[in-house]
Length: 310
Image (cartoon, rainbow, N blue to C red; front, side, top):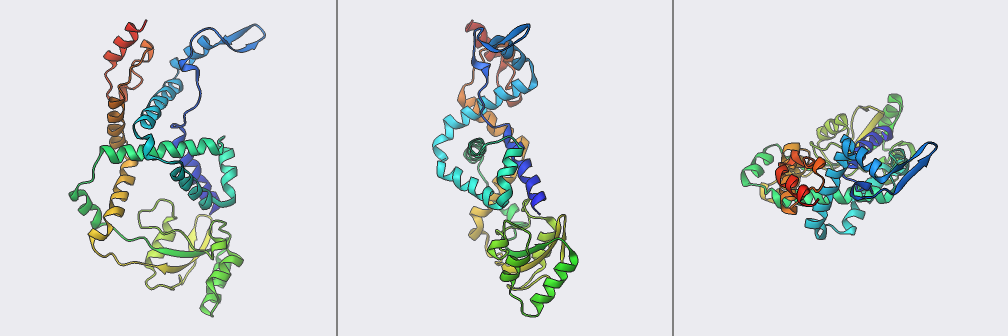
């Protein structure tokens, strides 16, 4: 379980790493020495030329421009409290493995929080620039399932899982058995209780979701061990709300739509294009005039700006 969660967080970190603002010398000029060695030295000009000629350097400049534009336009919409809340959510979800995962990806707490902030700013930009229609809500409602809450006991071997199910069927207390046997560090001390999830959740194992939604009544326990990538789970249904009316779930439906759009490159390209247009970006280095071409910026005006600045 921990290994799989580690991979998920690693993937999330890597997806956001491109949004991290780092200090580069792209904005520097002059011949100040960056490094010396036998036979010569490397200057800011040398380094800048290499950076701007590389795809990584161009990507970094693009990232810095987008991040700065987001901060300028929506910075007041995201508080430090929101960032801390999101950070603590990940820290709690991955338990004792969290710090080592950050270290493995060469990230500090401050850098990870900066990534979170940029991600939250991007969400704000999406919500400000793309509104949900009633038609889209109705379509989302057709496949909607309310979030359910389950508890799990995760063990390495099927035989152990079967033994625990027998103990539960003979009156064993699920919470106590979870604290005693579960290997899932994120839920073990909570009596196995997991965060609520729905059928579209990407943070929950597919086989676990399938088994969870087959449980009917609150208190029901899975009759067979649930095979997962890193062990076997025993599930107990804690809460399973009825679907109800669409009007009761408008906020959640909108959240699901926005979450889907955040993963849609076409939608996000359109949103970021609007952000950049409002930012009135002017590229001063003629060699980098097309760095934002993917977002439909007018490279000719950038080129003119570059020439007029010389």
